Image 1 (cartoon, rainbow, N blue to C red):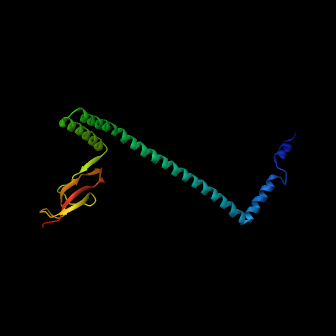
Image 2: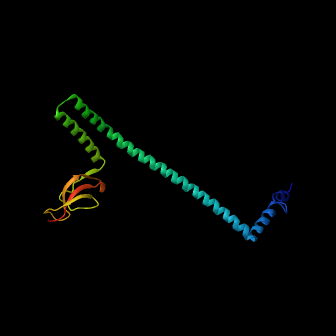
Image 3: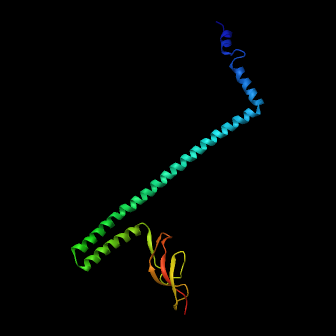
Length: 180
């Protein structure tokens, strides 16, 4: 066997696969419609993949958001259960005792437990007595003549509450309408 025979076996025969591939490439380069269709198909496929990925992302975010909401509600409810237990004990004091002091102590215990829970969650009271009326933080129920400057909060009918700096419930107030 000579070395020239070995090299001839490695070379493809004329008119083989390479010739067919070259012919197809030449035809595609000459046919702009085939090129445009191929490019369109590639872009459409990429677009469909991106749309599917985005749809999966939206579904995953919705699941994670719902899971987070449920965990937050679960934590708050778990913290409220001891307050519920205290309330049951206070109600039991009604049946077991005729003493107003025992009943008042039971209700005060529940009130303290609930307020402690609310404070731990970042809730604070909004006490606007004597302050200038702010429609973002107060709800005016009544305006009455008074010696105080117009728009001053004279009386708090219902307390308001804040969560951080956001108003959970505006304070319901009576404001001064100015001197009569």
